[in-house]
Image (cartoon, rainbow, N blue to C red; front, side, top):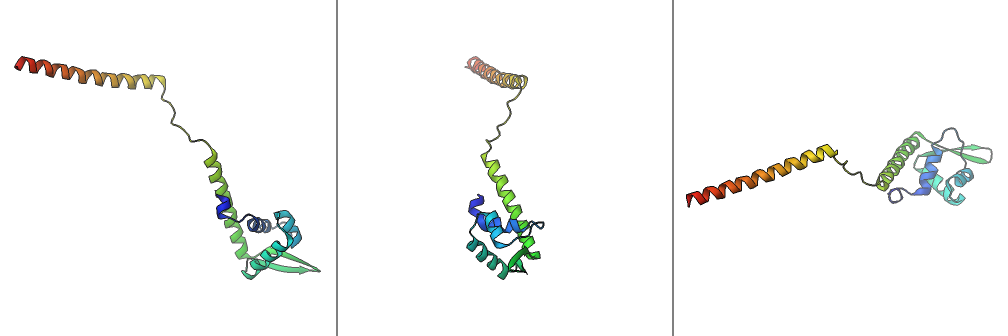
Length: 135
């Protein structure tokens, strides 16, 4: 299900940027997310235009971090990924069956059903006998 709803590589980049302890530059993001450098740079440019990431230049390197809007998006995306993983895990588990009743409960239910059957048969016998007397 997750593959239907979420593009894996862009999602990986956004979730990696969510880590505030880590400083990210494009080549490091590309390696960590399993994407090409070009894909990562183009995706970061689109995120920057959308106001999801900000760029900080340090010497010759461009460092990226999530904006407030980007942090909200990353947290929401992370929540969606976790829910999809949970749904997939539940779908793989076999269906839970109803527990079998205890032997005593099953015996009592069987006896009750048999008793009702005998009562109905006795009523029919009495009805037939009454009909014969009237005839």
